[in-house]
Length: 107
Image (cartoon, rainbow, N blue to C red; front, side):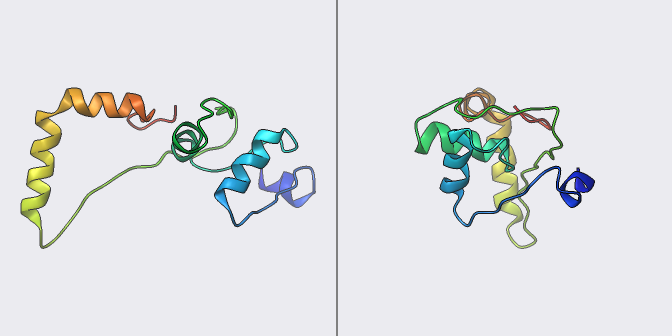
């Protein structure tokens, strides 16, 4: 991919506004938008109310994101959070479904 950028086969444009990146991607004037699919889907669904306006292409390079909680001083908070996660699996699964989050993969 880097070679294609270097030789001009692929042109890269940067924007300072996430909204602008998404709306430019939706116009069809650009072939791709590079950002976290989780964030893009949330933005499309919850902010723009246009779910599915952009589609994730698994054939393109991407990285998965992990979410972590840690603390040296607040071990009790970590323990409470772990207990919450264990006791509330139906809620966790519903939130994952609602926000299209999956374990170790991209939707």
